[in-house]
Image (cartoon, rainbow, N blue to C red):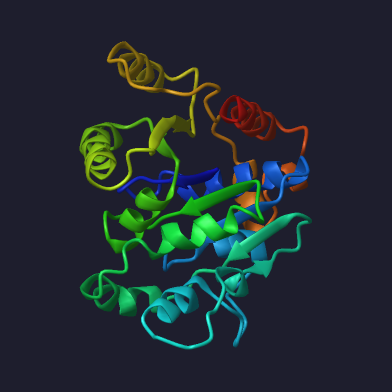
Length: 255
């Protein structure tokens, strides 16, 4: 099932959540694809350890292909590369995404990602889409293409205020473009159980009837090491408490 990880606020852990859930899927034998739509390319760097090599296919190449007509049809799979991790593939980000956004919007290419995922669904058991921290062409494309939506949430007042607008934007996409899209839940990230504010804030979200998922992802310095080594937690330290929280969350989503 295509799943988008989306929040209009930056720094809430979208790439970390995307890559760690995808890595767990792959480690469990599921054919898994990550599509990195953020021009910053954090998911791509996390999985590959650096920028795309010159000449390597990227997601920008996929979108560029939608802008040109050719007698030879280029399959979406031609823009995918293998990561160093078995069963885990990537559609690499590119800074060129910023440059072509206006052209894609003016040419009404908003449904091209959904069409591509319909083809790729035959090759992958799980597809995870990382998005930029903005409601723009790429995030709309992802929300239109996906079946599930995960919303990362940091326990602070700014994140909470942004959450309500975000949910309204997702509901608008559901109503106008993608009735099959389901908000699977809010993923609480960097949770500190001994601090009063995070606990109170999460309890208030639950009391409001919002779909807060458990377990909450604990705060850990280990994630920085994971980023630095370009190794999702399941590969870096399978027994760590944060890894086990990711595994449990993956299990909840698989039900």
